[in-house]
Length: 344
Ligand code: ASP
Image 1 (spheres, rainbow, N blue to C red):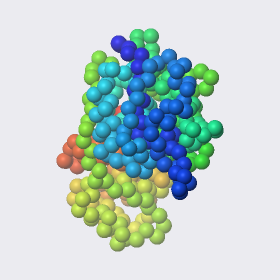
Image 2 (tube, rainbow, N blue to C red):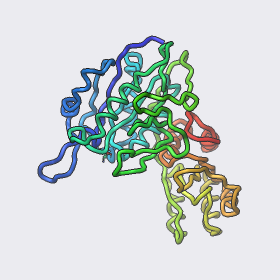
Image 3 (cartoon, rainbow, N blue to C red):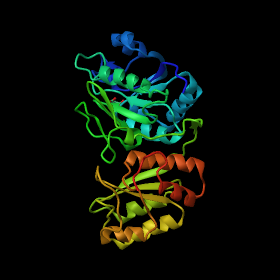
Image 4 (tube, helix red, strand yellow):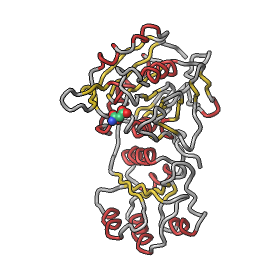
């Protein structure tokens, strides 16, 4: 595999590049130059780093499917010029972007590593420098034959490299902002990098990466809770623009024994709405046959989301809906892993 010894650093915004607004005292995104000036360590890196800034930089609460398409375009247009890509991104929606990119970059043979920080890079106790410098080194890491160590969309944070579509933001306060509850870590970055090769995807390095540039966001997410009202659920499932629904159920995929719930879910499935059952628990999988409260869900025609995160289920549906009109085809693809996102 031909190496370029270069990594492209893409800045979208997030805390890592933020500074204090003197009027309000609130953190707001700043320019890339400010960020680079705060990392003199760049000069000592073995890898050459080119930079690209989306303008204006954003708080990731403003992230959008249009922006995912722009990132995919940028990576695919420059794919051959770099050994890997690092995307600086706010932590709030990083897991959504990582999941979406994992589907939109098919047969990815190079690392795409998302990172950010809990404290801005200009602050003395920042976690941003370590996250940034380590992500660049991970994006450049390769085997002797030149192939990338981690040819996946990943999130790097606080010493752990996680599969992007398995990661979720778990902490708004501590430096270990992300966790991957249902899949082991891909690399531990301590004094040395310890890659867990058996956990890492093996793409076909002889085939090209295929970028997908369409997303259909007509998805809705709702959580079950004791006392949830029939009328609200009925209205939601009957909304004309909703093509798919992610239902966050209890435990291993359980729901209340309310005949109206079964009825409305069943009717929506029959109308062609794709409904995916994921658990409100962070860890574990949906197993609808385990309890009677889950078994009744099976009869409605809703699908198991297995051990998917909510971020992953939502973005996988958005990706599949843009490709297929037929709900049966979408259902079939939801049942299989496309890039290591579920364990079945
Ligand atoms: N609100 C920020 C963002 O997501 C939080 C962060 O970057 O950690 O952009």
